[in-house]
Image 1 (tube, rainbow, N blue to C red):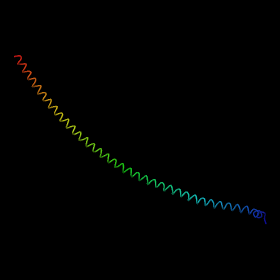
Image 2: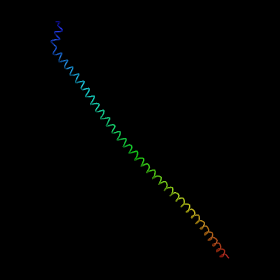
Image 3: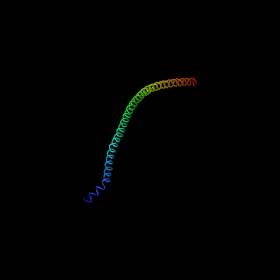
Length: 132
């Protein structure tokens, strides 16, 4: 028998133990890959579900906020419309009051002018009497 075969037969137990260790390492590595893959899939599923629930929550909040803001905008628009109508009515009242006041001032000025003319004519008559 050649020497190399005798050497292999002598080292068979060590070779068998190396083969067993390599085989167990490969099996452990394979099972680790499978379990880590399932763990990662679990985390991915968890994060996806969490993100989806947050997206749904935010969408609901956004819809509620938009509805609230549109109702508030409508309230403000109605308030501004009412205020505009009140301001318009006040302005009309102001304009009519000023025009009435202007008429009264004109009438009073006319009366004062008439009274001044009457007083002046009486003074002229009185001065003519005193000169005579």
